Length: 455
Ligand code: PLP
Image (cartoon, rainbow, N blue to C red; front, top):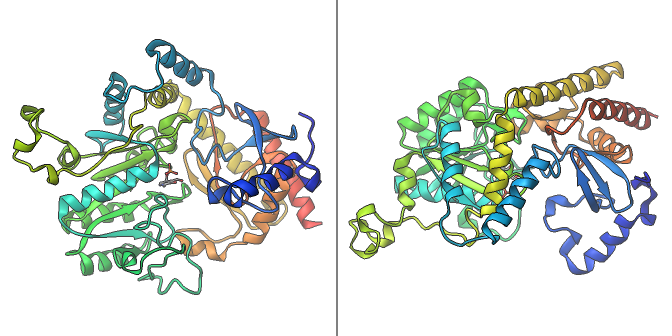
């Protein structure tokens, strides 16, 4: 790597590519979240914990494709599994059932207490979408409840109050449902009830009030991968949803395999009705999956066993079956990469070492910021965490309003110059490829960034 710094502005190739990209791609990015100022960085190659950009600058990667790459970039075991899959079958995709679908489904049933059966999708978004559809079919009710600040993918019912602004969001006990994007229809907002995270009493009050209309409550058990649901809160949520016949959906797209092999539900010992997975499950290839109780998952089963060919004569009408489809669902190459990834994580001690590394980095950073008398603490679970520029504990989305966002953005921008890749403001994910040397370099880079920002 030649270490041409991001700082060199318009001279860098990333900048030039970005100018061209804007001609052909709205905003120059293929997902809005990939944009940041002054311009996003275009990457050329990657290996293990490192990314290398088109200008030859090397970065230690803590974004890891928004947490998906738990083995790091291009892990040999995952690459081999993909190559073998392609060589042995002679195709990329069958478009028919195949055995890997069962192998991975059984694995998920073994690992996740809330999963008896599985359907695959191509993204986390599709998994949460299917979850909501199943919950509606199961309960015959329409509304869904979601927590303020929680993200479940970019579709209208859940893209509500994800990043609400301080002035608009209403009472902390009964938040106002806010669309933060244009092009929603007003009636869609009425389908979504916004709930206050980690406030059991207010959540209970709202759920009781709307129980007759609520099909489901969807929750990130660890919001954004770093704000933990309190134990009492998540247990209480399980109890009240059961009592009120509301389906409880755990969105474990981010937490799945990252906080425990069996997701946050295994950490909390709380069993949801439906579980959405994604990210790590695909081993770096696009995936999502929905798992849940047999009773609920069977709602999307097209026929009874005795009725394989004569769909129309089934006791359930064709129109009763919950629609779920997708050209690439259960893609063999993706499942092979996912299985190889899970096998690596299942090896003795691998998760423990990953968590120990993560804790080591968290502790070292906290110590460093204390030395410079900058209020900063980390919060997270397992292999994900975030830096919080505030003394105060963070229990929900609103607590983030009180943190020093400007300082965070300045530090992150400096870190990019120092070869630490974190999309400004984003959370840190660790991989099994990160080394002690990476951790030491990261702490050193933070120290340089602090000095620069303070100067
Ligand atoms: N749910 C959670 C908790 C997520 O973090 C994400 C993605 O960041 C999604 C759902 C959507 O997943 P995807 O981007 O694969 O559609």
